[in-house]
Length: 397
Image: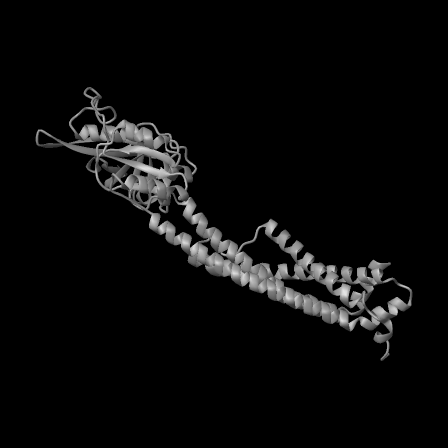
């Protein structure tokens, strides 16, 4: 009976009910859009920071004599995610050709299992000595596709003559330019070592018959170093900077983190202000509606209905109104979200969503909306309905 009375009352005052729902939508829909922008923008910033391996890289600027102990200590460091020795800078350039096209002075880097750049592409990093990954820019310049064979060429001077070693390689994967912006080729670690040995006058495997390999190698010039996470970058950089000349993205990372914190603070402040205003508006709407219905409540008391029955009628009405208002707000929110994402798609890329809410966010928002409306209704009913004096309410009838 109480539910039926509540529904009949809403239907009878349908214009007032629609006005209350519209008023609540005016508060809830902008809040949803604000939260979606906050979540979308901050999430994109954090994702770009953590997903781009270049932000985790530490580069050595000069050549050193790094022995096996150096690499063992780095590998055992809990902050290090990936480390691999590098040869001299002059030894890591190569030329590659395919179908008459040539790319010269290509930077060659070693890779292996756990390489963040390769892992980000969904590749495993395992390469044979005549397999390679290419940067997207290089592959496009040569017209190469995964599975194609190309010529890998390195040179050395022997008896005042330039001698070329031409080896057929197989392309096993292409690294997108966001991860490898320069013209780069990733090869097996042994291949990189053989490149330097060949240029130093030895006859290593792959680039010669392997008759005279370098068996005396004890040190390497540099290292490819990647930390596990952004929080590991600062302590590793500080440790290495004491003895080595290095460069990293620590300043850029800190700037992006600062921007993320500032945006988060701004959005949080605006959201809290909006929530406070929304609660005040809800109090005003419900209070006004209860004041308007005082004579109706008085007549219900006279007809024999208990105060608790009227109390529950008001709670049920506001519960229904809050649910309707939230559902309408969701419709407005999704329209706004679509507009935002469509507008920024061309500016930031099709995969970037500046406005987004997850299902858990939507459910949480609905629960909070209903709880606030019901809580406000209960408090106002306590003073406005339960303390209602029938004689005073009906005096002017």
